[in-house]
Amino acid sequence: MTVRFDSGRICLDLAAQPLDRTAATAATAALGHFLHTTGLVPAGAALRALDAQWVARFSELRDCVTALVDAQLDGGCAEAGRADLALERLNTLAAASPPPAPRAVRAESGLLVRASGDEPDCRALLAAVARDAVDLLTDPVARALLRRCESDGCHRCYLDTSRGRRRRWCSSETCGNRERVARHRAARRAKVTA
Image (cartoon, rainbow, N blue to C red):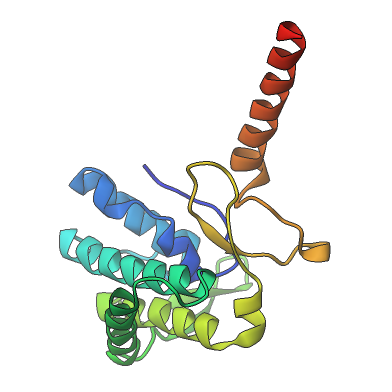
């Protein structure tokens, strides 16, 4: 199952990926889709080395990001030990490799398009996402925009860049619609029983 929603940050998009909760081939495909749709890997770039090891490493990074964002949203009161271990691992991943170097190449149409210099490397891609998390968690302006979806059963986080900062759901089309339908049904049941 591929999960796609725009949280406003690549690291938060990764946190929404259920990579270790699906079959191995589905998880590998989902990770490949995530890497392409977020722009970490240019569209059409081959990911021949993508395998279960990549999925395990990205799942670990996802768990680190989730622990640190949860701690931030809970006012730093979350399990301090878990957050400290996650922070140490996040910093290690961020420093492990330079991020992938994109290149501009001319497409058949004559326009410049983004391409990978070499085949994408797992360590470099992990470093890019980990650096995005470091940037998010150390930027007071971005941190102030962090929100958790208010829908029952959804724990996705996003940056609230809406006008007035009143966004309540990770996605108005999914969680927001689910909440509106539930309210409508509850109102109809209340009328029937009244």
